[in-house]
Image (cartoon, rainbow, N blue to C red):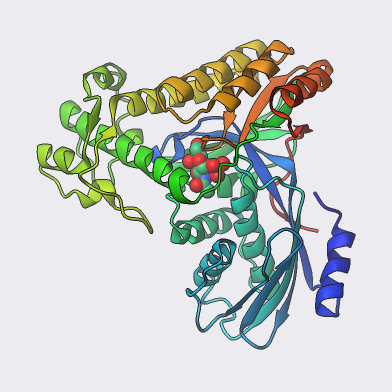
Length: 414
Ligand code: NG1
């Protein structure tokens, strides 16, 4: 995390006075449980020792100015006219302001953000921004949003930007604790801390490919959201389960027959055909928070469902392995997760495969892509004495960067 005193000085240089509040919002690395959150199934992330440092002071003019060392073009948004931003990162700021519309509505803020979190995808820089900014603004306005309320409001803000985020990132960043992973459940919502056993270190490594949330990557993410909903609807029909609202695989995952019935699902299907077959409104499948999905487009169903249901079981097994101190078993589950993401979920890339393989060969217990995939980062679990070798191997494979991360505290006032 960037040193707080440097950010305080940068804020003072830009705005002419010291900030009222300073907030540190970490990035996150998901250890296992990938593409399960938006199906209501569990995840097991850590917060890391890199992130965004946010300095903020309240102003009396209803204008929010956000300057940053990383993002080009300062944001300057009137709280009375939120929603006309064209610069992509300004839309994240606007989403936060919309969620905070009832907090000190006549006040504005001066904000300066600095980050040591690579922005190329997988380490959750977008959610570190959302959670950090929401925490800093609400604190500066005297009505701090914290804990689970902070996580869900930040997730709602990101959905306004058009990503059908499942909520894992914001929970991890809002609630994680040092030296622990955070097991998060969504149906019903719950979380618990899982101690990281001795002898387990983590390295993250860039694939060298950007995994931004715009354009094709967003379309690919949303296609998987839709494919898993079709699977949930069809499995529920077959198993005789009544599902209200958006059909989620999490609602059928505990039924023993579900993992068998998956193999009977169609390879691919269009949302409209699925809705017709189960005599329901297609909006239950294609409605996304801020995006449109073409209901006549065929999407994979069977392979997506197979990944999600098997990944949920791997999360349970991985948590048990951590509790038992079974580090090799934990690594094996990470490898299986990567294989499933590559073969069934089709969100790995040759560079992610290569860097994960290189880290395993250099002595990691296991390695997998982390985050949505399509580029971005991979994570390895390894013995402390292998950390240097794993970093060297990853850097040789893709050019890096690769570095060790520590399981750290979630967002906090500095
Ligand atoms: P990344 O790509 O790390 O931001 C995204 C989603 C998560 C989760 C993972 C896949 C956002 C903000 N985050 O993570 O909720 O669905 O993909 O497991 O969309």
